[in-house]
Length: 107
Image (cartoon, rainbow, N blue to C red):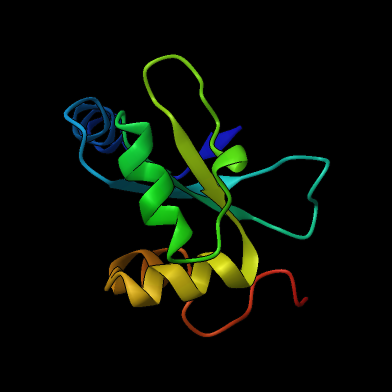
């Protein structure tokens, strides 16, 4: 379940994904399979080749792409999420979701 995002943010993410852009959406999240994580970043792009190439530079494997509907995406969690957000210059995501000063999952 997703929490902490506005409808407009989700709409903008979907539009970028459908246009073939690499798009980032971070939100609060709960999944009983991963109780140590409280956020996820979805990195999407409708161009699977482009998304796979983007992921490869961060050690993400093509088979990890969620191919759901019109919005293929990687789910980023924990230290990998924080590292990628930093490298992509998305400090606003880190600050907003309080990821900048902690390693999520290290509670």
